[in-house]
Amino acid sequence: MKKKTLFLMLAFCASLSVGAQEKHAFDKGDADTLVYEQLITANMPNNFHRSVDLEKVKAKPCSEQGIYVVEGEFYQVKSMRNDFYLQNRQGKNEILFDVRYPLESMTNLILNYVENNGRTLAFNHHQYGNVIKSGKIPMQVMYDLFAPHMEMYCMVTKIDKDTVNATLVFRNVKLDFIHMLVFKTPMNDIFKKDGTLYAELYTNIPQSDIRNLFPNPKNYRYKR
Image 1 (cartoon, rainbow, N blue to C red):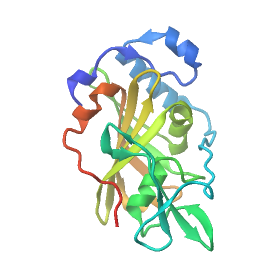
Image 2: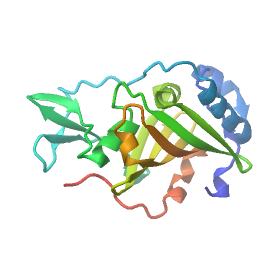
Image 3: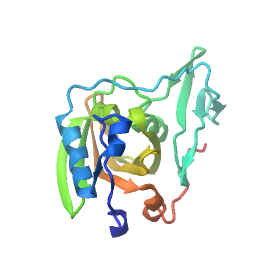
């Protein structure tokens, strides 16, 4: 991470209302500590998922029969997107999650479209002042804390037979910052209901700095 990302900023505080957040200013060290404590001490997951009517979304067919993409938007770099993928089974649309489609499945998983997610997130939280704290939580806890009031974008950056690498961004539009996870996860764990995903977590990054994190991003958007 570049040192220029380590500026003072408003803290993210999921337990406070938006109005309360605007009244409390912390430096980045306090903000990072707060995020870590919220993740580690959160109660059982609330299982937050955005409501999507899969029969009404505008989905474009991919080259493989029965596979569709619902195109969303990109964030600052064109490969950082919130597209998600469907498959049609017996005339009914379903969220695609299949070992034969690791890119699409990882995208759907980390954008929180896969319900009943019993996976664990093991992370190293890179905090202000070169502090790194580790944690292991139910993956759904992260979405319960961040997703209700933040936009999500991701890109899958590498796939081989054993590992999938991807980046997930949570964007807080109102408070002008992002949280970012960089995943490097064993392929097998993605498709285990009790698998563990591994990530480096960076929090409270000013939005203006994301292009510096990806100066020459490749376009990893799904194509067949």
